[in-house]
Amino acid sequence: MQAAIAKRAFAGFSHREYDSHVSPLTRMRLQPNHKTPRVSAHETREESGMEKLLNSLSGTIIAGFVLTVIVVLLIHAIH
Amino acid sequence: MELVDYGWWAQAVRWAHIGSGIMWIGHLWYFNFTQTPTMPKIPTELRPAIVRFILPEALFWFRWGAMFTLGFGLILAYMNGYLVDAIKLGIGSGNHKFTAIGFGMWFGTIMWFNVWFIIMPNQNKVMGVTPATPDEVNAARRTAGLASRVNTLLSIPMLYCMVFAAHYY
Image (tube, rainbow over the protein chains, first blue to last red):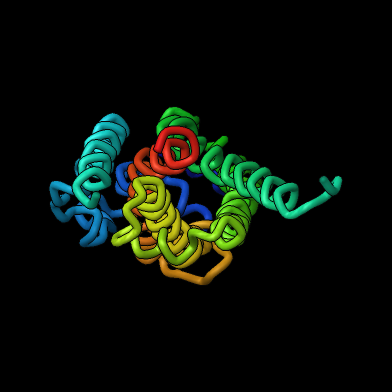
């Protein structure tokens, strides 16, 4: 049902526009042959620790504050 | 005192630097705090409105905000006489202010580089401005997103350094 709605919504779009707006899961559902979903290598590879941190907004903010503390210590260490 | 003396011009450049900075970081935080987390909740048929109309406009003000912030910032540092000391992180100057503003300048410069040489080329692929295969588009979306998050992370110590250099150290 969801797949059918998405297909209708993107009826007038070029392939690239369609592709850039549909999630990999929806794209898998839209594939005519479900046995061979078109999912690229980078979509299935494992994320590094840094990527996991940056994918989390709260993790990014906490890391920003931690870096700020390091910078303050460096400012005082230099003088 | 002349009505428009050197100090007036320095303050005018500072005003322009801060205004451009708000334009830049305001859009950066809009992308990271509002648009990106909301996209999965938007019905699929409505997403093209964001990507085709709002995103290109927001990216225009975002990238030029970055450019003018850097430009006015460098002019301001030169006019105030601490450009070289700040680039050297104040080492040998004995002044905390130059170290603080130097860290802020380096963070800002890294962020400016990210905007113009990582985020924009990849966003152009996502928006279809630069031709790319579907796999390249997906990779570009991921790269642009990560670079944008790196900039959000760096914006926190960058703002600390800028504000505290001017008002604390």
